[in-house]
Figure (tube, helix red, strand yellow):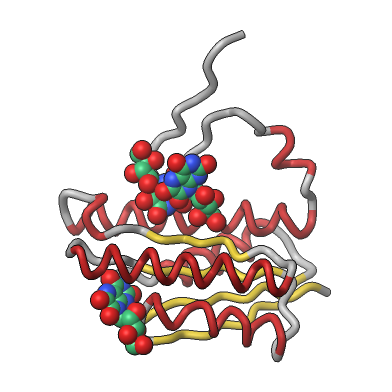
Length: 155
Ligand code: RDL
Ligand code: RDL
Ligand code: RDL
């Protein structure tokens, strides 16, 4: 039995974690889920560390929504750097699922983007711990999460 950690925020305007959890349960079995919700993205790195060390997670998904202002972009950079540091300390993956609020032109589109990016990265997290070969099959295929895939170039 593996444990998948789910870290998310109150700041985000969409419940991406619930989309991901729904997708994980549709995809397979053999795991339990530990969820840890924090106020905002800068609180995610330590939440992930706690999920690894105290809750023995095998992988963690970190969901966050950076706002549109320069201060938010700086917060996103700081949060992301912290998430990288925790991954290297723990030698385990954190799938960073950030949707920048200004990636979408409307609230409806933002909701769609959050749901679809969360679901697509849930599959990435699942396959990274259960069937890593699946990602090799898609190497170089120009995959994106949320927006349409770009596809490969050349031969
Ligand atoms: O530790 C408490 C807060 O500092 C922390 O939750 C921050 O991540 C909150 N926050 C900001 O302070 C900010 O300027 C967030 C953003 N911007 C943001 O764009 N998205 C967040 N939090 O999730
Ligand atoms: O941990 C899951 C993702 O956060 C991670 O795979 C990112 O590297 C994906 N990614 C971005 O989030 C992004 O904004 C990528 C790019 N840009 C990029 O330009 N090239 C990538 N990934 O390979
Ligand atoms: O060049 C267009 C997009 O690739 C670009 O807008 C990306 O940065 C969008 N993006 C993020 O901003 C992000 O924080 C993506 C991800 N995360 C992601 O995980 N997967 C994406 N795009 O495909």
